Length: 337
Ligand code: PBG
Image 1 (cartoon, rainbow, N blue to C red):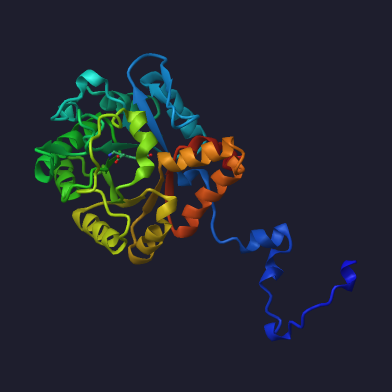
Image 2 (image 1 turned 45 degrees about the vertical axis):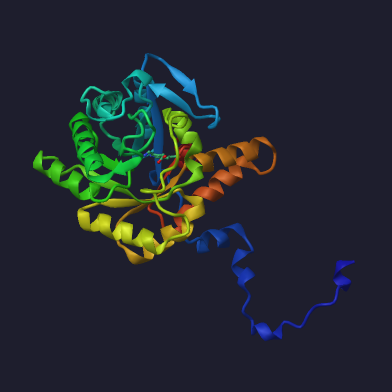
């Protein structure tokens, strides 16, 4: 008999009750602080050689690598759903991977061909091109390696060449993900010298050495090659002051926008960056985060659809201007309805 339950004397609250605004849907809508919209979502896609080819990625159930013709269709779907931009990653054929990663600056590489195919067919969507050597090199490292050392300035030289072929092929945004010192400034200078002053740089500024990239490395085919780790260039997850120094440096070198990566375990870094700097900040909900939601959902441990929505909204609350997410198309369609 609930009406018989004794009440606590709440007079100490002085009438202040925070549940008051949560009592009905209209009131919750009125006090809602952030929005999640299709234009907040950037869609990462993996490209492979071939015609009408799609291949599954074991550790990312629901995500497929696509051949160029299917990438063009995906770009149309993304545009129609209100997604502003795609982030593209190549799965380079094995025989083209070499120690020097030279395929990265072959003007006819898979990446350049997909960029120009989409630019021709779907000029309304933005194209973000990842720049790093791991997608082209035989050892899975983001930089050039000599005697086990990741070489900085030599890698920057290769990154600049890679960014230039991508810009010529139609990339709108160059996104260096290699974490070498000085790559943003070097790429900015080279782009400007070639008349690509309108091409943006979205820097993976605060990129942590993370276990959450595992499925991505399967997707681009670098995982089984990688020996050791990336801790001499990607950041230590114990740090966040250092993330602000990385971001500040990239802004000084000419980055138009910056990224924090991975996403959900690093919301504190997004918030600190948002409070400190006035540039657009993007979060990357990486492959391992995707896999966790999918696998926990499939196991019945969590409600998958609710988890997707809640995780994406958390990025907006933390201050991200947008999110790179493998859920982009699905969620843009849902949110657009
Ligand atoms: C490559 C790159 C990685 C990711 C984006 N660009 C992997 C890495 O640094 O090892 C990870 C994205 C993801 O996990 O979804 N430089």
